[in-house]
View 1 (tube, rainbow, N blue to C red):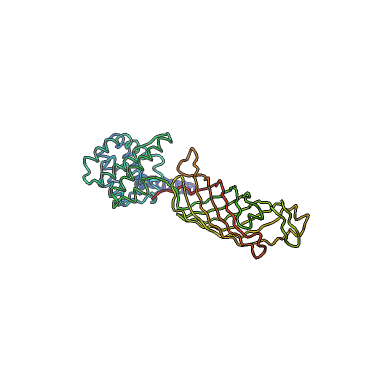
View 2 (cartoon, helix red, strand yellow):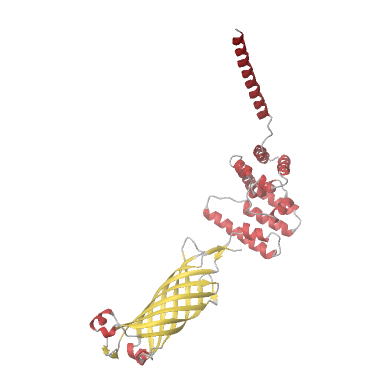
Length: 398
């Protein structure tokens, strides 16, 4: 009987200990210090409520307490864009000017802000507030900010941020309007401490890059001079393909060219007779370099010069009938000079960046086959009309 009572007592003691343990744990949970996230989340939600109600005084108190909690670290409480909208809403223009001077757009927010922003809707409320009261903010800035440079910057910043439209065309028009204001500001205040912010975060203006490339295919007539004229007649027909790289006002070009002609008389060569009327092909591989003294949105004009390696060959039909024509050994280096004019092409959707060009080029090429056969001594002049894919890509202006 005593053993039974002892067993019941032990069970009772264990149950009592477990109950007290649960109560202690529950008490610890209830009294646990509130987490940073809960503090940030509640403060941001309360701030949003005051902004929505138009209670600027209470909103300012919440903002100050929230920042004091993190020793003034903005990204522990807000996204940069949220903070800018907030300072407009609170009319704290001096604080906004200080913040814009030290703005780091790439600085990441804390995990607390990132998580809270998913549900607290503060960013949306602040944007809506700016859109609703931007005219009032603009009047307030003009009346209460004394420095003209600061005043112009705040108006510019407000113009950029206080706009939204679902229409792409309207957004493009707004961007162009802000860009115009930004350019005027930069021109009027070249030493502004907000210059970097204007160039990198407000003005979204794009222009052609300093570099670009083209792939061209062209055709055109060829005129022969010197002994080439007596051997092949006055003219021929040329086909060119080129790869061009441009940087600023300089360019380099790899050119591959073919010219088709026909003999105007019998030629004694390689112990055989290359008969009158036979076809002949001039093949050239050349490297050109040029300078672009004039280039605008539509046109570019440029001289160039280069050196090539040229060879004359007989067609396959003739070489089959006469193996002596297979290797004419008519090879030479051929210097050339020229002038080109480009007309850039733009699509209807994008008028800022060209997708190609039409080019008209004149070339004067000097052959020197005299060591092999003086009958091929002379030069060629060509006029080529070509179409080129490519251009200078768009890049944001700084």
